[in-house]
Image 1 (cartoon, one colour):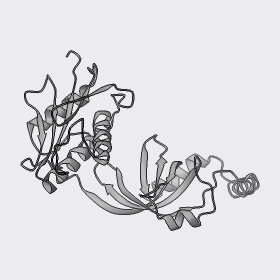
Image 2 (spheres, rainbow, N blue to C red; image 1 turned 180 degrees about the horizontal axis):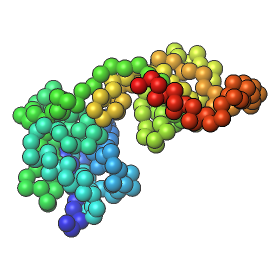
Image 3 (cartoon, rainbow, N blue to C red; image 1 turned 180 degrees about the vertical axis):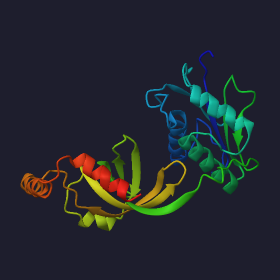
Length: 257
């Protein structure tokens, strides 16, 4: 397939005027641009969305990408959106964007979203009349768990949150309580921290979302050499009569079956 440009369009009259390149509410522009970036990047990040050049077009508010050469998963997900409104097989990040757009379009009937590209038979339209939804097997449950990561950003003027870079390189936004941050005496910015959070957990994709901070947990990755030496000595004494520790453990395991 030759390089393809993709156009994302927002049509909105909710502010009492038609959203267009000449007049748009700043919050709407920011959230729409962020959704487009997330959708293009997806889970596989095959598109360098941060460095991608775009053009703002007339007609509502439309963002058109420069031609994309190699984005097979993105192209496949766009075709899948035309095949049916059940978001099965769509990458999770893109599925979240479409679900968010669908929810917004149902709330405000004069709001809709359109994705078009030359290789698509028709445009993908998310509106009050569409019914894009996740598979019933794609379930989110409430969990409480511990996560470890580097704090990239902490605080906020209106909404307080922490941006945590997890060990796999992904970023998780965690809503925080301003009082908790104010009373915290530790400078945690750009340091690895352990957090206890409550969040929604996807039992199918193992993703976390809508995370809220419960507390920071003391985290000490340094090894206590004296304690390690003491435990090693105890282990040597306890295992001194065992000729082959591996065979001994295997024998114990077999005895339990």
